[in-house]
Image (cartoon, rainbow over all chains, first blue to last red; front, side, top):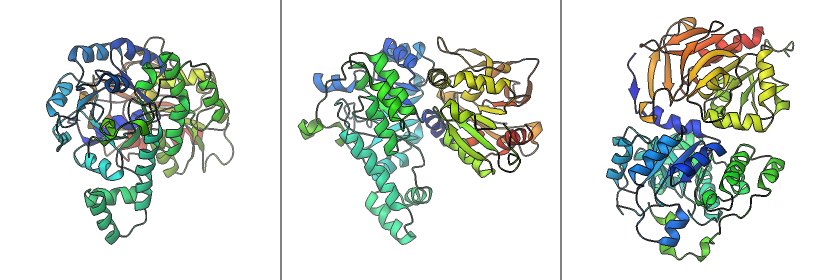
Length: 295
Length: 202
Protein backbone atom coordinates (compact mmCIF):
# COMPACT_ATOMS: atom_id res chain seq x y z
CA UNK A 1 0.00 0.00 0.00
CA UNK A 2 2.64 2.52 -1.03
CA UNK A 3 1.54 6.08 -1.50
CA UNK A 4 2.50 7.74 -4.80
CA UNK A 5 2.72 11.53 -4.73
CA UNK A 6 2.85 14.01 -7.59
CA UNK A 7 1.52 11.63 -10.24
CA UNK A 8 -0.19 12.91 -13.39
CA UNK A 9 -3.49 11.62 -12.07
CA UNK A 10 -3.09 13.51 -8.82
CA UNK A 11 -1.98 16.68 -10.63
CA UNK A 12 -4.76 16.60 -13.21
CA UNK A 13 -7.21 15.44 -10.56
CA UNK A 14 -7.12 18.67 -8.58
CA UNK A 15 -8.13 20.60 -11.70
CA UNK A 16 -11.01 18.13 -12.19
CA UNK A 17 -12.30 19.11 -8.75
CA UNK A 18 -12.18 22.83 -9.61
CA UNK A 19 -14.55 22.43 -12.58
CA UNK A 20 -17.64 24.57 -12.64
CA UNK A 21 -15.90 27.04 -10.37
CA UNK A 22 -14.33 30.47 -10.38
CA UNK A 23 -10.63 31.07 -9.63
CA UNK A 24 -9.95 34.63 -8.54
CA UNK A 25 -6.78 36.75 -8.76
CA UNK A 26 -5.69 38.16 -5.39
CA UNK A 27 -2.67 40.19 -4.35
CA UNK A 28 -2.92 39.82 -0.57
CA UNK A 29 -4.53 37.86 2.28
CA UNK A 30 -7.47 40.26 2.66
CA UNK A 31 -8.47 39.84 -0.96
CA UNK A 32 -8.01 36.07 -0.66
CA UNK A 33 -10.44 35.96 2.26
CA UNK A 34 -13.00 38.03 0.35
CA UNK A 35 -12.65 35.64 -2.59
CA UNK A 36 -13.08 32.54 -0.42
CA UNK A 37 -16.11 34.01 1.34
CA UNK A 38 -17.65 34.86 -2.04
CA UNK A 39 -17.39 31.25 -3.22
CA UNK A 40 -14.11 31.05 -5.17
CA UNK A 41 -12.92 27.44 -5.74
CA UNK A 42 -9.31 28.66 -5.59
CA UNK A 43 -7.34 31.88 -5.53
CA UNK A 44 -4.44 32.96 -7.74
CA UNK A 45 -1.67 34.89 -6.00
CA UNK A 46 0.19 37.47 -8.03
CA UNK A 47 2.17 40.63 -7.41
CA UNK A 48 -0.23 42.98 -9.16
CA UNK A 49 -3.50 42.28 -10.96
CA UNK A 50 -3.14 42.44 -14.74
CA UNK A 51 -4.88 45.84 -15.04
CA UNK A 52 -2.22 47.35 -12.74
CA UNK A 53 0.61 45.59 -14.56
CA UNK A 54 -0.77 47.17 -17.71
CA UNK A 55 -1.14 50.69 -16.31
CA UNK A 56 2.04 50.74 -14.22
CA UNK A 57 4.26 48.95 -16.68
CA UNK A 58 7.65 47.58 -15.69
CA UNK A 59 8.68 43.96 -15.19
CA UNK A 60 6.05 41.81 -13.50
CA UNK A 61 7.38 38.93 -11.40
CA UNK A 62 6.36 36.22 -8.94
CA UNK A 63 4.82 37.58 -5.70
CA UNK A 64 6.82 38.13 -2.54
CA UNK A 65 6.96 34.83 -0.56
CA UNK A 66 5.62 36.65 2.51
CA UNK A 67 2.47 37.60 0.61
CA UNK A 68 2.05 34.04 -0.63
CA UNK A 69 2.51 32.65 2.89
CA UNK A 70 -0.06 35.16 4.12
CA UNK A 71 -2.55 34.07 1.48
CA UNK A 72 -1.99 30.36 2.22
CA UNK A 73 -2.53 31.07 5.93
CA UNK A 74 -5.69 33.10 5.30
CA UNK A 75 -7.70 30.58 3.25
CA UNK A 76 -8.36 26.84 3.12
CA UNK A 77 -9.27 26.64 -0.58
CA UNK A 78 -6.41 25.85 -3.03
CA UNK A 79 -3.86 28.61 -3.60
CA UNK A 80 -2.30 29.02 -7.02
CA UNK A 81 0.54 31.42 -7.80
CA UNK A 82 2.05 32.80 -10.98
CA UNK A 83 5.62 32.27 -12.18
CA UNK A 84 7.14 33.89 -15.25
CA UNK A 85 7.28 31.85 -18.46
CA UNK A 86 10.51 29.84 -18.42
CA UNK A 87 11.46 30.94 -14.89
CA UNK A 88 11.94 27.52 -13.34
CA UNK A 89 13.55 28.96 -10.21
CA UNK A 90 10.45 31.03 -9.42
CA UNK A 91 8.56 27.75 -9.87
CA UNK A 92 10.97 25.96 -7.50
CA UNK A 93 10.33 28.68 -4.92
CA UNK A 94 6.57 28.40 -5.33
CA UNK A 95 6.80 24.63 -4.89
CA UNK A 96 8.91 25.14 -1.74
CA UNK A 97 6.20 27.52 -0.45
CA UNK A 98 3.71 24.64 -1.00
CA UNK A 99 1.32 26.41 -3.32
CA UNK A 100 -1.30 24.04 -4.74
CA UNK A 101 -0.85 24.98 -8.43
CA UNK A 102 1.64 27.08 -10.40
CA UNK A 103 0.47 29.22 -13.32
CA UNK A 104 3.30 29.66 -15.82
CA UNK A 105 1.77 32.86 -17.02
CA UNK A 106 2.09 35.30 -19.89
CA UNK A 107 0.59 37.94 -17.58
CA UNK A 108 4.02 38.25 -15.96
CA UNK A 109 7.07 39.30 -17.97
CA UNK A 110 8.60 36.24 -19.65
CA UNK A 111 11.97 35.11 -18.27
CA UNK A 112 12.78 33.03 -21.36
CA UNK A 113 11.64 33.82 -24.90
CA UNK A 114 12.54 30.34 -26.17
CA UNK A 115 11.79 27.71 -23.54
CA UNK A 116 8.90 27.09 -21.21
CA UNK A 117 9.46 25.36 -17.86
CA UNK A 118 9.94 21.57 -17.94
CA UNK A 119 6.95 20.96 -15.73
CA UNK A 120 7.56 17.20 -15.38
CA UNK A 121 10.40 18.11 -12.98
CA UNK A 122 7.89 19.30 -10.38
CA UNK A 123 5.54 17.54 -7.95
CA UNK A 124 3.25 20.55 -7.86
CA UNK A 125 0.90 20.77 -10.87
CA UNK A 126 1.00 23.56 -13.48
CA UNK A 127 -1.65 25.45 -15.41
CA UNK A 128 -0.59 27.21 -18.63
CA UNK A 129 -2.28 29.57 -21.04
CA UNK A 130 -3.04 28.81 -24.69
CA UNK A 131 -4.59 30.64 -27.60
CA UNK A 132 -5.09 27.57 -29.79
CA UNK A 133 -5.00 23.77 -29.68
CA UNK A 134 -1.37 23.41 -30.80
CA UNK A 135 -0.18 25.69 -28.02
CA UNK A 136 -2.31 23.81 -25.46
CA UNK A 137 -0.85 20.47 -26.58
CA UNK A 138 2.73 21.78 -26.44
CA UNK A 139 2.14 22.90 -22.85
CA UNK A 140 0.63 19.49 -21.99
CA UNK A 141 3.69 17.84 -23.59
CA UNK A 142 5.84 19.91 -21.24
CA UNK A 143 3.80 18.64 -18.29
CA UNK A 144 0.94 21.12 -17.81
CA UNK A 145 -1.91 19.47 -15.85
CA UNK A 146 -4.50 22.13 -16.69
CA UNK A 147 -4.97 24.61 -19.55
CA UNK A 148 -6.63 28.01 -19.55
CA UNK A 149 -7.40 29.89 -22.71
CA UNK A 150 -5.48 33.15 -22.49
CA UNK A 151 -7.84 35.89 -23.51
CA UNK A 152 -6.34 39.33 -22.97
CA UNK A 153 -5.73 39.86 -19.26
CA UNK A 154 -6.34 43.19 -17.56
CA UNK A 155 -8.63 44.60 -20.23
CA UNK A 156 -12.16 43.72 -19.14
CA UNK A 157 -12.68 43.01 -22.85
CA UNK A 158 -13.94 39.46 -23.22
CA UNK A 159 -13.51 39.25 -26.99
CA UNK A 160 -10.09 37.56 -26.92
CA UNK A 161 -11.26 35.03 -24.33
CA UNK A 162 -14.15 34.23 -26.65
CA UNK A 163 -11.82 33.88 -29.61
CA UNK A 164 -9.38 31.58 -27.80
CA UNK A 165 -11.91 29.22 -26.24
CA UNK A 166 -13.78 28.99 -29.56
CA UNK A 167 -10.51 28.33 -31.40
CA UNK A 168 -9.36 25.57 -29.04
CA UNK A 169 -12.73 23.81 -28.92
CA UNK A 170 -13.23 24.27 -32.66
CA UNK A 171 -9.86 22.72 -33.44
CA UNK A 172 -10.67 19.78 -31.14
CA UNK A 173 -14.00 19.26 -32.88
CA UNK A 174 -12.26 19.35 -36.27
CA UNK A 175 -10.07 16.36 -35.27
CA UNK A 176 -13.07 14.16 -34.55
CA UNK A 177 -13.50 11.32 -36.99
CA UNK A 178 -10.28 11.99 -38.90
CA UNK A 179 -8.41 8.94 -40.18
CA UNK A 180 -4.93 8.05 -39.04
CA UNK A 181 -3.19 9.44 -42.12
CA UNK A 182 -4.99 12.75 -41.64
CA UNK A 183 -4.03 12.87 -37.95
CA UNK A 184 -0.33 12.68 -38.88
CA UNK A 185 -0.83 15.81 -40.92
CA UNK A 186 -2.89 17.41 -38.16
CA UNK A 187 -0.01 16.76 -35.71
CA UNK A 188 2.39 18.42 -38.11
CA UNK A 189 0.14 21.44 -38.53
CA UNK A 190 -0.57 21.74 -34.81
CA UNK A 191 3.15 21.33 -34.04
CA UNK A 192 2.23 18.81 -31.37
CA UNK A 193 3.08 15.14 -30.77
CA UNK A 194 1.06 12.66 -32.83
CA UNK A 195 0.13 10.49 -29.80
CA UNK A 196 -1.40 13.46 -28.01
CA UNK A 197 -3.26 14.58 -31.13
CA UNK A 198 -4.67 11.08 -31.55
CA UNK A 199 -5.73 11.01 -27.89
CA UNK A 200 -7.60 14.31 -28.32
CA UNK A 201 -9.21 13.11 -31.56
CA UNK A 202 -10.47 9.93 -29.89
CA UNK A 203 -11.68 11.55 -26.67
CA UNK A 204 -13.09 14.68 -28.33
CA UNK A 205 -11.51 16.74 -25.57
CA UNK A 206 -8.19 17.66 -24.02
CA UNK A 207 -6.69 15.13 -21.58
CA UNK A 208 -6.69 17.92 -18.96
CA UNK A 209 -9.25 20.42 -17.72
CA UNK A 210 -9.77 23.56 -19.84
CA UNK A 211 -10.65 26.81 -18.07
CA UNK A 212 -10.90 30.21 -19.67
CA UNK A 213 -9.35 33.54 -18.65
CA UNK A 214 -8.49 37.04 -19.74
CA UNK A 215 -11.10 39.78 -19.82
CA UNK A 216 -13.97 38.25 -17.84
CA UNK A 217 -15.54 41.11 -15.86
CA UNK A 218 -19.26 40.39 -15.42
CA UNK A 219 -21.55 37.47 -14.50
CA UNK A 220 -22.70 37.46 -18.13
CA UNK A 221 -19.08 37.13 -19.33
CA UNK A 222 -18.57 34.11 -17.06
CA UNK A 223 -21.78 32.45 -18.23
CA UNK A 224 -20.78 33.13 -21.85
CA UNK A 225 -17.52 31.25 -21.30
CA UNK A 226 -19.36 28.32 -19.71
CA UNK A 227 -21.93 28.17 -22.53
CA UNK A 228 -19.09 28.16 -25.04
CA UNK A 229 -17.77 25.02 -23.32
CA UNK A 230 -15.16 26.10 -20.75
CA UNK A 231 -14.82 23.87 -17.66
CA UNK A 232 -14.54 26.92 -15.41
CA UNK A 233 -13.42 30.54 -15.26
CA UNK A 234 -10.45 32.57 -14.06
CA UNK A 235 -11.30 36.14 -13.12
CA UNK A 236 -8.39 38.53 -12.73
CA UNK A 237 -8.72 42.27 -12.48
CA UNK A 238 -12.49 42.03 -13.03
CA UNK A 239 -13.23 41.56 -9.33
CA UNK A 240 -10.83 43.69 -7.33
CA UNK A 241 -10.80 46.52 -9.88
CA UNK A 242 -14.58 46.84 -9.67
CA UNK A 243 -16.74 48.99 -7.39
CA UNK A 244 -17.94 46.18 -5.11
CA UNK A 245 -15.57 43.19 -5.21
CA UNK A 246 -17.33 40.88 -2.72
CA UNK A 247 -20.73 41.25 -4.36
CA UNK A 248 -19.35 40.97 -7.89
CA UNK A 249 -17.33 37.89 -6.98
CA UNK A 250 -20.38 36.15 -5.51
CA UNK A 251 -22.45 37.12 -8.56
CA UNK A 252 -19.86 35.64 -10.94
CA UNK A 253 -19.86 32.40 -8.91
CA UNK A 254 -23.66 32.13 -9.22
CA UNK A 255 -23.58 32.84 -12.96
CA UNK A 256 -20.87 30.21 -13.48
CA UNK A 257 -22.94 27.47 -11.82
CA UNK A 258 -26.27 28.52 -13.37
CA UNK A 259 -24.75 29.51 -16.70
CA UNK A 260 -27.73 28.23 -18.67
CA UNK A 261 -30.33 30.05 -16.59
CA UNK A 262 -30.85 33.62 -17.82
CA UNK A 263 -33.13 34.42 -14.85
CA UNK A 264 -30.40 33.60 -12.35
CA UNK A 265 -27.76 35.48 -14.36
CA UNK A 266 -30.05 38.51 -14.68
CA UNK A 267 -30.65 38.52 -10.92
CA UNK A 268 -26.93 38.12 -10.23
CA UNK A 269 -26.16 41.03 -12.57
CA UNK A 270 -28.31 43.56 -10.69
CA UNK A 271 -26.88 46.33 -8.54
CA UNK A 272 -23.23 45.37 -8.79
CA UNK A 273 -22.02 48.94 -9.16
CA UNK A 274 -19.28 49.81 -11.55
CA UNK A 275 -17.50 47.14 -13.51
CA UNK A 276 -13.77 47.56 -14.02
CA UNK A 277 -12.88 50.27 -16.48
CA UNK A 278 -12.20 48.39 -19.67
CA UNK A 279 -9.75 48.73 -22.50
CA UNK A 280 -10.76 47.52 -25.95
CA UNK A 281 -8.20 44.99 -27.12
CA UNK A 282 -8.27 46.57 -30.59
CA UNK A 283 -6.94 49.80 -29.01
CA UNK A 284 -3.88 48.00 -27.64
CA UNK A 285 -0.72 48.24 -29.68
CA UNK A 286 0.63 44.76 -30.46
CA UNK A 287 3.57 44.89 -27.97
CA UNK A 288 1.08 45.35 -25.15
CA UNK A 289 -0.92 42.25 -25.95
CA UNK A 290 -0.04 39.66 -23.32
CA UNK A 291 -1.61 36.74 -25.18
CA UNK A 292 1.19 36.89 -27.72
CA UNK A 293 3.71 35.93 -25.04
CA UNK A 294 4.31 32.18 -25.08
CA UNK A 295 4.22 30.03 -28.20
CA UNK B 1 -40.15 7.79 -4.34
CA UNK B 2 -39.27 4.40 -5.78
CA UNK B 3 -41.33 3.42 -8.81
CA UNK B 4 -41.77 -0.07 -10.21
CA UNK B 5 -39.08 0.48 -12.85
CA UNK B 6 -36.51 1.49 -10.22
CA UNK B 7 -35.12 -2.01 -9.97
CA UNK B 8 -34.23 -1.98 -13.67
CA UNK B 9 -33.07 1.56 -14.29
CA UNK B 10 -33.04 3.72 -11.19
CA UNK B 11 -33.18 7.48 -11.67
CA UNK B 12 -30.37 8.99 -9.64
CA UNK B 13 -29.08 12.53 -9.34
CA UNK B 14 -25.60 13.99 -9.09
CA UNK B 15 -25.36 17.32 -7.27
CA UNK B 16 -24.07 19.62 -10.04
CA UNK B 17 -23.37 22.93 -8.31
CA UNK B 18 -19.61 22.56 -8.78
CA UNK B 19 -16.96 19.84 -9.03
CA UNK B 20 -16.46 16.62 -10.99
CA UNK B 21 -20.14 15.80 -11.43
CA UNK B 22 -19.73 14.80 -15.09
CA UNK B 23 -17.42 11.93 -14.09
CA UNK B 24 -20.05 10.61 -11.65
CA UNK B 25 -22.80 10.94 -14.26
CA UNK B 26 -20.68 8.90 -16.69
CA UNK B 27 -19.97 6.11 -14.17
CA UNK B 28 -23.63 5.87 -13.11
CA UNK B 29 -24.93 5.86 -16.68
CA UNK B 30 -22.32 3.21 -17.52
CA UNK B 31 -23.73 1.04 -14.73
CA UNK B 32 -27.24 1.17 -16.19
CA UNK B 33 -28.72 3.89 -14.03
CA UNK B 34 -30.35 6.99 -15.47
CA UNK B 35 -28.26 9.77 -13.96
CA UNK B 36 -29.21 13.45 -14.10
CA UNK B 37 -27.46 16.60 -12.84
CA UNK B 38 -29.25 18.24 -9.92
CA UNK B 39 -29.10 21.99 -9.29
CA UNK B 40 -32.65 22.78 -8.22
CA UNK B 41 -35.10 21.59 -5.53
CA UNK B 42 -37.64 20.38 -8.12
CA UNK B 43 -35.03 18.06 -9.66
CA UNK B 44 -34.55 16.45 -6.26
CA UNK B 45 -38.16 15.33 -6.17
CA UNK B 46 -37.69 13.03 -9.17
CA UNK B 47 -34.66 11.04 -8.04
CA UNK B 48 -34.25 7.83 -6.02
CA UNK B 49 -30.67 8.43 -4.93
CA UNK B 50 -28.02 11.15 -5.02
CA UNK B 51 -24.27 11.41 -5.45
CA UNK B 52 -22.46 14.46 -4.06
CA UNK B 53 -19.25 14.80 -6.09
CA UNK B 54 -15.72 15.96 -5.42
CA UNK B 55 -15.11 19.67 -5.56
CA UNK B 56 -14.92 22.53 -3.10
CA UNK B 57 -17.23 21.87 -0.15
CA UNK B 58 -17.39 25.54 0.90
CA UNK B 59 -18.72 26.47 -2.56
CA UNK B 60 -21.27 23.64 -2.63
CA UNK B 61 -22.46 24.65 0.83
CA UNK B 62 -22.97 28.30 -0.16
CA UNK B 63 -24.75 27.56 -3.43
CA UNK B 64 -26.96 24.84 -1.93
CA UNK B 65 -28.22 27.25 0.73
CA UNK B 66 -28.53 30.21 -1.63
CA UNK B 67 -30.62 28.29 -4.16
CA UNK B 68 -32.92 26.49 -1.71
CA UNK B 69 -31.42 23.02 -2.07
CA UNK B 70 -30.01 22.56 1.41
CA UNK B 71 -33.30 22.08 3.28
CA UNK B 72 -34.88 19.63 0.82
CA UNK B 73 -31.57 17.76 0.70
CA UNK B 74 -31.53 17.41 4.48
CA UNK B 75 -35.14 16.20 4.37
CA UNK B 76 -34.29 13.63 1.68
CA UNK B 77 -31.33 12.35 3.67
CA UNK B 78 -33.34 11.99 6.87
CA UNK B 79 -36.15 10.23 4.98
CA UNK B 80 -33.64 7.55 3.97
CA UNK B 81 -32.74 8.41 0.39
CA UNK B 82 -29.46 6.68 -0.54
CA UNK B 83 -26.65 9.23 -0.87
CA UNK B 84 -23.01 8.66 -1.79
CA UNK B 85 -20.48 11.46 -1.19
CA UNK B 86 -16.91 11.57 -2.47
CA UNK B 87 -14.36 13.94 -0.92
CA UNK B 88 -16.26 17.25 -0.73
CA UNK B 89 -19.44 15.15 -0.83
CA UNK B 90 -18.32 13.29 2.29
CA UNK B 91 -17.74 16.64 4.01
CA UNK B 92 -21.24 17.79 2.99
CA UNK B 93 -22.77 14.68 4.61
CA UNK B 94 -20.81 14.77 7.88
CA UNK B 95 -22.49 15.92 11.09
CA UNK B 96 -19.30 17.72 12.16
CA UNK B 97 -16.53 19.29 10.05
CA UNK B 98 -13.17 20.47 11.36
CA UNK B 99 -11.10 23.13 9.60
CA UNK B 100 -14.14 24.46 7.72
CA UNK B 101 -14.23 28.07 6.50
CA UNK B 102 -16.05 30.62 8.66
CA UNK B 103 -19.77 30.00 8.58
CA UNK B 104 -19.53 26.77 6.58
CA UNK B 105 -22.41 24.37 7.18
CA UNK B 106 -23.06 20.79 6.17
CA UNK B 107 -26.19 18.87 5.31
CA UNK B 108 -25.33 16.37 8.02
CA UNK B 109 -27.00 13.05 8.71
CA UNK B 110 -23.78 11.01 8.73
CA UNK B 111 -22.60 10.43 12.30
CA UNK B 112 -18.99 11.47 11.65
CA UNK B 113 -16.35 14.02 12.47
CA UNK B 114 -14.52 14.85 9.22
CA UNK B 115 -11.44 17.02 8.88
CA UNK B 116 -11.16 19.09 5.69
CA UNK B 117 -7.80 19.11 3.78
CA UNK B 118 -6.46 16.65 6.35
CA UNK B 119 -3.28 15.73 4.47
CA UNK B 120 -1.95 19.24 3.75
CA UNK B 121 -1.38 20.99 0.44
CA UNK B 122 -1.64 19.55 -3.07
CA UNK B 123 1.96 18.30 -2.70
CA UNK B 124 0.61 15.80 -0.15
CA UNK B 125 -2.08 14.49 -2.53
CA UNK B 126 -1.46 10.85 -3.45
CA UNK B 127 -2.76 7.61 -4.90
CA UNK B 128 -2.60 4.19 -3.28
CA UNK B 129 -4.21 0.74 -3.21
CA UNK B 130 -6.77 0.30 -0.49
CA UNK B 131 -8.34 -2.87 0.93
CA UNK B 132 -12.10 -2.48 1.18
CA UNK B 133 -13.47 -5.70 2.73
CA UNK B 134 -17.11 -5.13 1.65
CA UNK B 135 -15.97 -4.87 -1.99
CA UNK B 136 -13.58 -7.85 -1.86
CA UNK B 137 -10.64 -8.29 -4.22
CA UNK B 138 -8.83 -6.64 -5.88
CA UNK B 139 -7.99 -3.62 -3.71
CA UNK B 140 -9.48 -0.25 -4.70
CA UNK B 141 -7.04 2.11 -6.39
CA UNK B 142 -7.79 5.30 -4.50
CA UNK B 143 -6.84 8.88 -5.44
CA UNK B 144 -6.71 11.39 -2.58
CA UNK B 145 -6.74 15.05 -3.66
CA UNK B 146 -6.47 17.56 -0.83
CA UNK B 147 -8.64 14.97 0.80
CA UNK B 148 -10.59 14.94 4.04
CA UNK B 149 -10.18 12.26 6.73
CA UNK B 150 -12.81 10.73 8.99
CA UNK B 151 -11.45 11.63 12.41
CA UNK B 152 -14.21 10.01 14.40
CA UNK B 153 -16.76 7.40 13.35
CA UNK B 154 -19.89 7.88 15.43
CA UNK B 155 -22.00 5.07 16.90
CA UNK B 156 -24.43 4.99 13.98
CA UNK B 157 -21.69 4.81 11.31
CA UNK B 158 -19.26 2.06 10.27
CA UNK B 159 -15.77 2.29 8.79
CA UNK B 160 -15.42 0.52 5.41
CA UNK B 161 -11.71 1.18 4.80
CA UNK B 162 -8.67 2.74 6.41
CA UNK B 163 -5.15 3.70 5.35
CA UNK B 164 -2.19 1.68 6.59
CA UNK B 165 -1.85 4.07 9.54
CA UNK B 166 -5.45 3.41 10.58
CA UNK B 167 -7.02 6.66 9.42
CA UNK B 168 -10.56 6.02 8.16
CA UNK B 169 -11.28 6.99 4.54
CA UNK B 170 -14.50 5.12 3.65
CA UNK B 171 -17.67 4.92 5.73
CA UNK B 172 -21.28 3.72 5.68
CA UNK B 173 -24.40 4.42 7.72
CA UNK B 174 -27.65 2.84 6.54
CA UNK B 175 -28.25 4.33 3.08
CA UNK B 176 -25.30 6.74 3.29
CA UNK B 177 -21.87 5.96 1.82
CA UNK B 178 -18.85 8.23 1.88
CA UNK B 179 -15.25 8.10 0.64
CA UNK B 180 -12.39 10.58 1.10
CA UNK B 181 -11.12 9.59 -2.33
CA UNK B 182 -12.39 9.62 -5.93
CA UNK B 183 -13.37 6.29 -7.52
CA UNK B 184 -15.04 8.29 -10.32
CA UNK B 185 -11.73 9.34 -11.86
CA UNK B 186 -9.98 5.95 -11.93
CA UNK B 187 -12.48 3.68 -13.67
CA UNK B 188 -13.32 2.01 -10.34
CA UNK B 189 -17.06 1.27 -10.33
CA UNK B 190 -17.63 -0.88 -7.25
CA UNK B 191 -18.51 1.93 -4.85
CA UNK B 192 -21.09 3.22 -7.32
CA UNK B 193 -22.49 -0.31 -7.68
CA UNK B 194 -22.64 -0.56 -3.89
CA UNK B 195 -24.57 2.72 -3.82
CA UNK B 196 -26.90 1.64 -6.67
CA UNK B 197 -27.69 -1.60 -4.82
CA UNK B 198 -28.97 0.58 -1.96
CA UNK B 199 -31.03 2.64 -4.42
CA UNK B 200 -32.55 -0.49 -5.94
CA UNK B 201 -33.59 -1.89 -2.57
CA UNK B 202 -34.65 1.41 -1.01
